[in-house]
Amino acid sequence: LDLNITENQKEQMFAFCDLDCSGEITEKEFLDGWEMMIQIYLEHTADRLGLSTAQIIMVVVYILIFLGLLISFILLAISAWQNKSSFNAVIQSALISGAGRGVTALRQRGKAESEGNLDGLVKKLTDGNKDDADGE
Image (cartoon, rainbow, N blue to C red; front, side, top):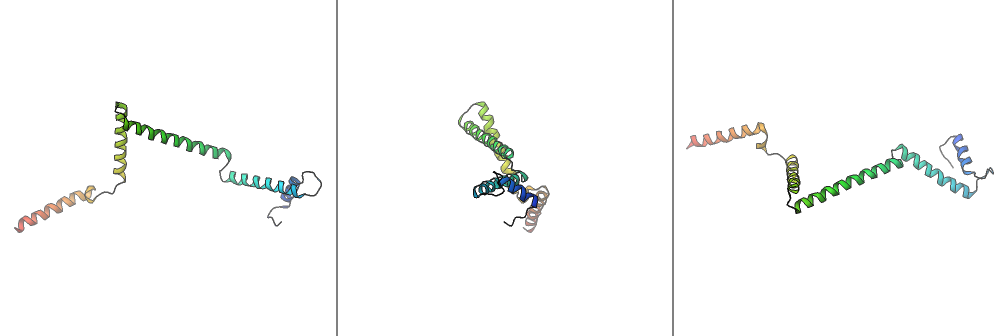
């Protein structure tokens, strides 16, 4: 095999595969050793990329917590729409105001809504009305 590894690594690989210390590697020893080396290589590569088992478990736990919170929020919102108690009215009002603020923040502003343009538009309209009145 043309592997880009040092002589020391080749010797370690041979010693790892030669389980019966006969100085020769059987086909079974080679296949077992090869599979184990691929597994070790994948684990080291995953660790270098930040994908260790502990990190994967942490990400899965965070995702489950987030989904749990999201589902509980949705269920709370649904129950707030169904019931007429004061607590539910507060939740319902908070949902409506939050949605309103979100829409307000995301929508495009008209020309008259920016502070600098409002005065200019009013002046232009009043000047246009004066010209029309003067022309009559």
